[in-house]
Length: 195
Image (cartoon, rainbow, N blue to C red; front, top):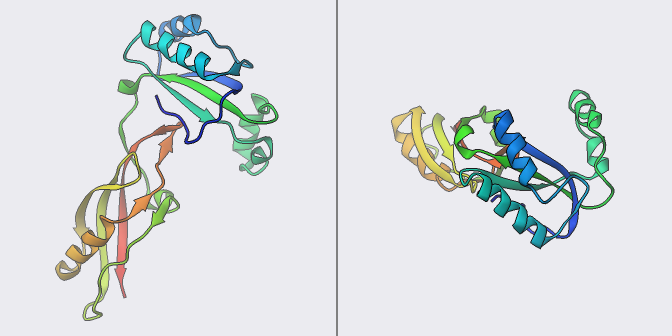
């Protein structure tokens, strides 16, 4: 089960959702849940709900995520804000969503553009550079679910700079990247400049 850090229960359950489930599976699992939208979700009710999902189908998983506060909706770009507002504003105060999904139906590793991933970088280690040679090195990088760098493979760049770039990028740290609220491994390309 995926949960946000420091989840404070009890809190209001805003939405119960299903992701990557067929219609019959969705109907079946929802009918077994002891929770409903608008309920006050306690630790005991959360545990019972997870057990109900696992009893229905042990392959399914659950994710609980915080709902942004109402004022956050005003900061979204207009098309996204309008789509979100059609389903209504979240309740005042702390609330969460409860999502049931089939991990096998969701790709575990996704490819994202470097510009989309760059904003998630929280620690960047610069490569050792003696200034003798300048250039750029492009690397294929796999970012783990925890935000750590799992793999670094050279794509292009001067041979003498590639190893320095690889050693630096292996130490980079990203915020965990979530797609549809679920942590995913990410494949991207990064460029390391040697001025």
